Amino acid sequence: MRLSQDISGFTDQMVTDCALGSASIFFYDDNVGEGQLSYLYHVGVSEEAQHRYDDGRVFKSDPFTRQLLARSHASGAHFVHWGDAVLDRFVARPYTSFLDHYAVDVVGASTRRLAPGLCLIIGAHRKGRRIGSADVPEPLLEQRLHSLSNMVVDHFLSDLIDSSDGRVALRTTMGGTGDGAAPCVAGLSPREEQLAALLCRGLQNKTIAFEMDLSENTVENYLRRLYRKLGVRNRAGLVFRMTQRLH
Image (tube, rainbow, N blue to C red; front, top):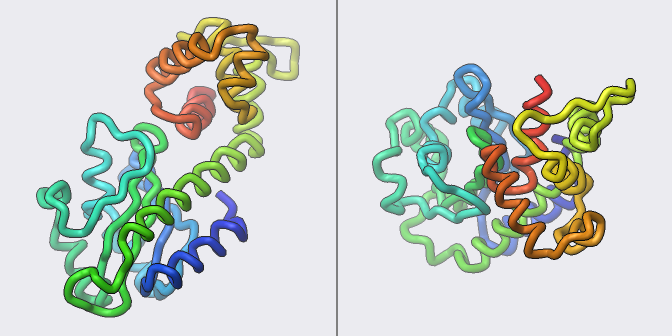
């Protein structure tokens, strides 16, 4: 995914307004081999720390990612505080050693599952090692992280659709491949394929209802069934899954 100026600018402003020392945005894909990390943007994180977190496989023991993957139901962005009970059984020595070595004081993270095994994590860290979190306006931080997560997902969708694989996925859901063939995506009805195509174009439910000559309630029912069949919980997951099904 390409980094946009609005994402970097919003992150920089969040760090300033929320009195943070650093922040990190990255994707983790558990579907690739032993797991794959993809950085999007950092503020105040040294290259050495980035390298160790990735090449040292520290991300495999990150409790924020591990708790998210372990949850049977996870949709939308969730802010998890460092020290929350939900993290307790996932905290591992490689991760805490990494924090100690680089003096990282974690406030918390926005966690979001985009598709099965694919996570978006936005971590927020204090300046230095301070006791307590009074120095960080956490309600404001949580609000900013939620907005930032939505912004990243919007760009993720846009980039995926603009990519060659994304365009192939879009053509497939629309019933054409450019060579006259019109293969169906396995398990989807023609109506569901049409809905998937409109979703991939970024249309909202009201517009989809008009395009398909359906009520918004019927569109929502189709949407729930489509998400269930593809094993996803949001639009980003749908486009990602449609791309995966071609390979």
